[in-house]
Image (tube, rainbow, N blue to C red):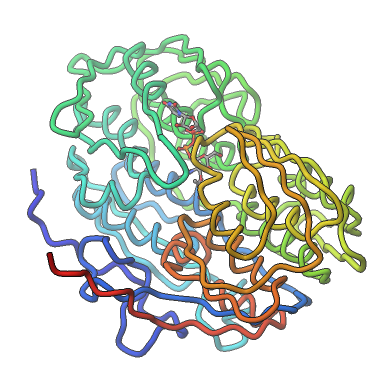
Length: 480
Ligand code: EPU
């Protein structure tokens, strides 16, 4: 165990908006932050209209798991179109601690930012996996990146035993692991919990099993697929998650030699193979970042073209925007959202894919807050997603929550105020809501936004917004 290891600064040093010499991407309260009371803030002036083109790179929630999937084959894998965000840097560190050599390289210059002389939003990552990767992922990294739990399945399959720190809950709610554990147990693993770790062992190797998930959990589906590809015999996962990121992971695994069918449906069949080989794979475009800009266009009565993500993966979300009055044009790898009038209120219910994505809930609330009429917003995935509603209320939004429902009565205009980002998506939603407010909105703790959006400020500028990023000091702790 290595609890006493000092956490390296995993900030992304070339982000141009950070104050000189100050690390970004790691927030106060996170271990390793040298300036404990300093927080990154983004300031926007209200009354802006998003207009122009924005390019979206690979999906965070795919790339993180593609990196974990590389653990399944000794040798050198390469993943391209990987977003330049803090979470990916942390995953790189998780893999290094497992004995992998991890190198980030400049990606193909598909990103228009590069052509314009800016900082690339995507990179490729080359991962050299040893014959025997390590078997422990510590809390100091797992608590900063819950997705680290996705090394559980691959390491158990490769090494037959593993200890991964339990990630615990976070600002969007409790994050259970029972389905991961029940599925792996059916595949022959013995799993226990001790001192905050999930400890799994399968001394005789994993075997195929019939697994019915209680809920189409993204993380459980991924862990079980990555364990099943090297298990003896056939695994069938019913009620599996169908997200495009799951399809992306399956397609990389299939190219590594895995035998998987049914990806993108609720039933996955996986025939275990003795070994896999490393490959090069390009990450699917980020539908949540793309959806963020789609809602941003609607909220600000703007005109935004988004390239790099398949609009088919946002069908329900774009359909909501059309119902609210937006004009939406789609092409295979791009779409345009234009809104000329104040949007009309629409109801939204979040559901597993292909339903409305929970990660776009803050944007749906933001849109409802400035729409004409009342919207009923229902969250079915995370019990804490509405926590950020209090911050939206500071901007004057009229929101009443009751359990997993919120009634939002639209206002012509919000009112600029200092607010705090509580998670990745809430942060992005608050910044965009600030564009619809009178005066200045300052969103603090935007290191959360850096976890999921490669260069939010540069994208806002490219879309015509006056925005600045800086550092501010929180109230010093009182001596008692
Ligand atoms: N759940 C359990 N037990 C389990 C697994 C899940 O109770 O064994 C519960 C969770 O507590 C949660 C719900 O089921 O309430 C959904 O969890 P799921 O496993 O589907 O989500 P996840 O894998 O933890 C991923 C994304 C999230 C995204 C959700 C839903 C990554 C790294 N994270 O989380 O993305 O919201 O799927 O689509 O892939 C984000 O990017 O900001 C983010 C939170």
